[in-house]
Length: 372
Image (cartoon, rainbow, N blue to C red):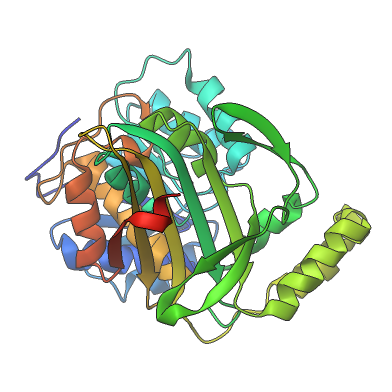
């Protein structure tokens, strides 16, 4: 599907009036003024109020828990963007049945596996982009672009610095509900089962600040293995407040977090984790090592910094994938199959889009002792 240059192209943003959804709509409208935007969710009133602030935007009511969420639409959109958690794949299947391109930014690793299996027998006539890696595929896009500079990728290390004062939507803490569950990680070609917040690694972030980061499960650890052929991919995370990460590690190692993960403690657990601030930068360090095209050991390190924070970086990632789905702004349109952001043919265009939207990419080549 390629609608490049199509003035009437439309995007249905399900969850379009939430914290992230509204930023997505604003960015899409600014970068693609002719694009028709439809903000959707369970509250038609909230959607309509948000649509008043965005050019070429309208609103509709859609409940993703309905058996066929798109059935009531009078006109089919060109792309459906899932910003609300599509827990039963009903929105996904509703779009695929109608041949509508679909971009999703809500699935964690296990849910992504389920969705891929569900799509396997489908006769797809439009692209499905599962962009649920860290910050809607921003990190995977950068990692894959760096990996293309190597002939062999031995390892990709992704280290996340989470600022406690950053703005956040309520869905941002869903990862914490799975912290007590071990997960697979591939290291040097072998799969190992790891516990969350284990295996510390010291990492430098902006301004020379150094933090210990800890194992963490994200879809990037699965998708990048297959997309770039890396022998190993590891994701770690930390908070910019050392006391907080220390407390989280204690709760996990003592078994207290497993008890708190019971449904009866949902409110308490979420109140502990969801205390968004007024705003702070979001940072991710991506380190890629392997063999270059001259047969020598080589490595790259890219620091990704979103001055406007994690919700904005998520919006940037989503916008980039919508533009890829539609073939907008010179992008090569995604094929009519399931794919991940890092499988784009035009990764250079993808990283260029990130910079255009205010995400800073600071790259350095590793030399000497850094390669040991």
